[in-house]
Image (cartoon, rainbow, N blue to C red; front, side, top):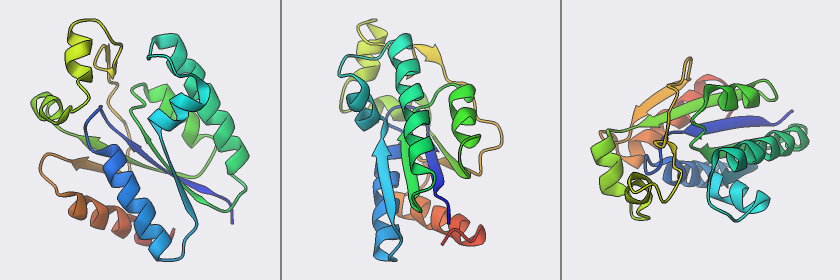
Length: 170
């Protein structure tokens, strides 16, 4: 079996990391080898400086290379990434069999969840926030679109697991 990718995308504070972590736990409880890597972890592997357009492209080059290496390892990869450009998301789909789950919420909800203060810093132009400082290109053809302001994490997880079962990934 080749590896597969569950790509969970959305704006900062949309709930990507929480859902990805819960999904990783649920798969492991079922005896399925899975690996969750968050965008912050990828960024720290490449560089520790703040985001800018160039470092994001550098990070995505690293993510694509990492995916190439992992695609024959018989693992379900779970990436939680902002991935604000359609080309970033599509580049991963060309490498590996991918299910794309996109989380959305209103900007007011996202800002209310922002415990890191990145939206405030981006408003002051102190910080480049992908998808906010530069427009988020809406996904096309995502496998599952979830409004995280209306669904509990438990319900999101249930819907993702149902999708994985229907696609015979689990």
